Amino acid sequence: MNKKWVVKEKVSDALINKFPEINPVILQLLYNRNIVEQKDIDEFLNPEYGNNLHDPFLFKDMKKATKRIWKAIQKKEKIIVHGDYDADGVCSSVILHDTLKSLGADVSVFLPHREREGYGMNTKTVQKFIDEGNNLIITTDCGISNHEEIALAKKNGVDVIITDHHEAPNDLPSAHAILNPHVKNETYPFKNLAGAGVAFKLASALITESLDKPEYSFPEGFEKWLLDMVAISTVTDIMPLLGENRVFVRYGLIVLGKTRRVGLKALMETIGNRRGKVDTFTIGFQIGPRINAAGRMDHAKLAFQLLTAETKDEAEILAEKLQLNNVVRQKITGDFVQEAKIQIGEVGDSKKLLFAIGKEWPAGIIGLIAGKLADEFYRPTLILTEIDGKVTGSGRSIQEFNIVKALEKTQIHFERWGGHSQAGGFTLKSAESVAQFQIDFQKVVENELQDKKLAPFLDVEAEIVLNDIDWKFFEQLDSFQPFGESNRSPYFLVRGAEVVGMQQVGNGGKHLKLMITQGSGIVRKTIGFGFGNFFDIIGIGEHVDAVFEIGVNEWNGNRELELKIIDLKKSD
Image 1 (tube, rainbow, N blue to C red):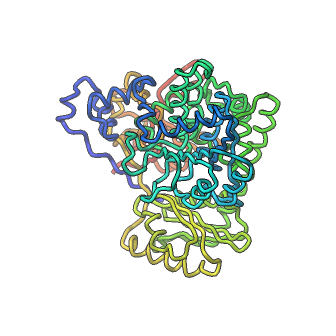
Image 2 (spheres, rainbow, N blue to C red):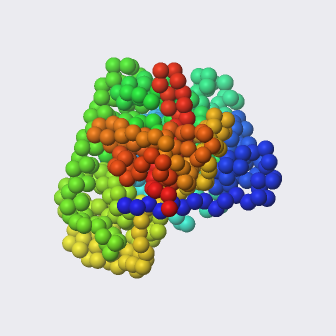
Image 3 (cartoon, rainbow, N blue to C red):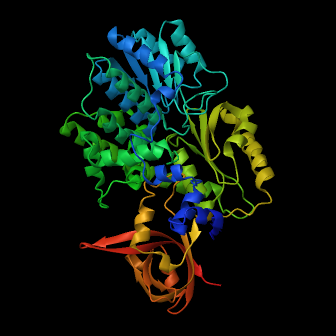
């Protein structure tokens, strides 16, 4: 499918004149991220742990939350942390578990089963907490919409502290304290924390207050050692890597590289990180999927046990189980993607919605199936599964279509639903309503997309010339790391580059090495993974336009700049 190249609006001459000391291409990247003031530029390029994090007590309920926790610790009350089954929920639970345990609290952790208990709290679980004699429930990565469940706890004398980061309803639950940056009139300035970011703020507040309590103390550097969990959550939950999140992930990657957690060490050994460094790719494509696989394929407690393991033997067994879960997850996801494609049939311009339903497809992977199909065909995609007469669904979307607004327009069919513009989930009231729901949702899609030609696009940050690329420029570009949501590794465009060398490489010649120049004598090596077919399309001496990332190729102690081709075409 041909991709449209969308080049960002060029930075103004006025801004270039305001910062003459900054390379114009680097300034363009800052402008693209809406970073145009000296203070913001300094904080972005040189984030500092001590200076660029907000005081946790800026949360309006933070004092209330910590006061209740200290009371529970001092009175030896039973505390239970209620997390979630994804990586953010698991890592958030680890943060609170480790912090409270270090304070000598009587703390346990509950993680729901994705299919049996579902997302968030439910009344059966809360009643179980009550029956077990728990005095305080602390939610993490959930709870903000659980009115009935929290009212039940309160009625039975159990206080609830909510730590969450999901959109908050206007009518809030009757919790003892609520820590959620999205609550109306919340005074905390940074709104894009992951669930683990909110949990970390609570931990940080307790650590700060412990300094005035001689009977309580934390090991040296305890707070910073929690940042591995915050980094994993922030990247895996696709939170924007700007502001505080940038600080969390920058320092969290350092902690990950020297983690003391035997479980993470065992997991990294199982993964076999050939790239030799721990970065956001490592989290997003290696660590995160394996932690998520626990909740998708079995139970999230497996991941929690790994991250809190105390012995190497235990950690190695758990890491192998997680690895096996992930392999199985990859296999069955691939199988069901093919089944869904058969149902969907040919995807032409007129087909604006992809829709498939399976019998007993695991609920934990239908979102992955929808995501893969939406990426491949660039269409809003709904994947449903029927299990024991109950139909649940997951949707993934494209930039032109807000899927949660579409779900809102068809909510008459749902028992429960939610999401955001690009992803949503739902449970139908009845299995018999699948056909009518599909018709109604299709109408919404057609009304919004019928006149639009849907094609994927590439966000290009700047058009440059090959002369712009040298080691000094790369070092400045490298200061934009860690890359992630809202701070992607930049795509650059070069037009009219002359091909002076080319070679097919890899199994069956699937990949392409190109040597290109723009007449200055400087020749740059490029690598195009999956572009081997261009070997028969372009020739030496011809000119190409290329979208690429800038990286480094290292071998036998040597380093050279290398351009990774993202898209390629002959020059007009």
